[in-house]
Amino acid sequence: MDNRLFFPATQRNRECISDVLYRIIKKGSVLEIGSGSGEHAVFFQKHFPEIIWQTSDPELLHRKSISSWIEYEDLTKKMPQPLEIDVEKIPWKIPLRLAHSLQGIVSINMIHVAQWSCTVALFRESGKLLKNGQFLILYGPFKICNKHTSESNYFFDNSLKMQNDLWGIKNLEEVCYESKKNGFYQEDIIGMPANNFSIIFRKIL
Image 1 (cartoon, helix red, strand yellow):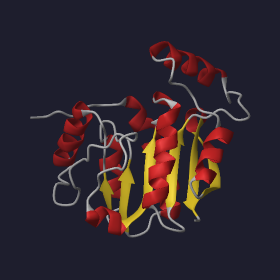
Image 2 (cartoon, helix red, strand yellow):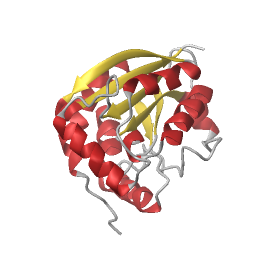
Image 3 (cartoon, one colour):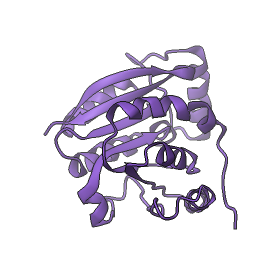
């Protein structure tokens, strides 16, 4: 059964996110938190054949879509099935093979459609899983010095809060402070199309 979902934003940003990943991807496994439809995952797996892209999502509908995309792209022999990970249900249940081969964690367009405690849990568990020098990458819109970087982000933030008053675009300084509490430092902040950013964190402790 074809359970594929289609998220238009994926088509617009997957190439530019791939360019960021090219800078740091090595052999091993990458864990994606909040994989959504799975469109990013299969695209990155095909672009980085030397790694294993491990998807995850708390929503069954999304996990079914991910599985369908893996099958559609003929990646069943390469990509494992998605994990059921809710960032706040800790510790995350991940296979030993993933824990041993993990080189980094990626989360795309997740923290602004979640409450702040999800960001806290993301850094806490990532800090436990990752070793010195390994990366955590966040992609999405951010406020800087508690100010929106564009008018469109201001309206987007309001629309998110109308759906759930705990959602919304996070302040970059607060995110970075949370990262430091869990042994990360901000290696780079990269401006992306449509007023988004890729933030690269590295584990140092």
